[in-house]
Image 1 (spheres, helix red, strand yellow):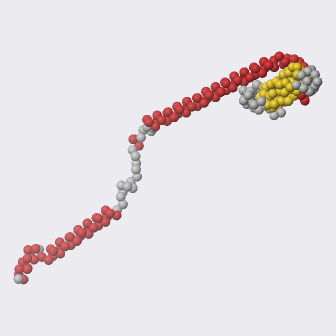
Image 2: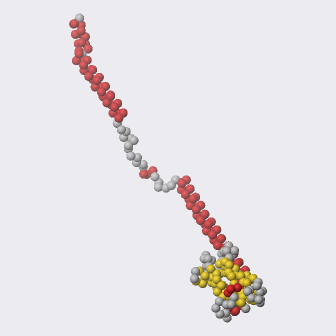
Image 3: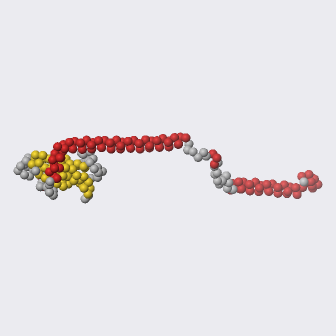
Length: 217
C-alpha cells in the first residue's frame, strides 16, 4: 500500500508541486483584489481635466437671429426717437401759430387806441393820475398760447366819463423785459372796462406784469 502512494505522488509531481500551485493561486487572488480596490478608489482623471474649447470654432460674430433682433431693436428705437422729435416739432409749431394768432387778435383790438395812449403818456409826469383805478390779473398760459399776459381792469373812480392811457411792464425779477402801451376809451363814471396786455418775449419764463404809468384824461 505504501508503495502505491509513493507511485501516485511521483505521478502528480509530489507534495512540492502541490505547494507551488497553491502559492500561485493565492498570489493571483491578491492581485485580483488589489486591482478591484484600485479601480474602485482611484479618482477619475477625466472629470478633473480642464475644458479647452477650440478657439477656431468661434467666428466672433453674433448668430444671425440675435444680430437681426439687435438690428430690429435699434431701428425701433431710432424710429421712436424720430417720431418723438417730429411730435415735439409739430407741437412747437402749433403753439407758435396759436401764439401768433392770439397776439394778432389782441393787437388788433388795441391798435386803435395805442397811438393816442402813447401820445398821452409821453407828456405824463411820474406814474400818472390814475394808478389806483387800474388792477392787473395774470392770465394762464393755457389761455394765451404760452405768452405772458395780464388782464387790465379799469374802474372809473370819477363822476365823468374818462379815457385811460396805460403802460404795462413785464419783469423777470427786478429786470424789465418788455413794455406795452394800451388805451381804453370812454369809460363811464363808476363803470368797468378791460383790455389785455401781453409780452411775446421769454415765453419759457413766468414774467410778472405791473402798471408803470396810468393817466386818466
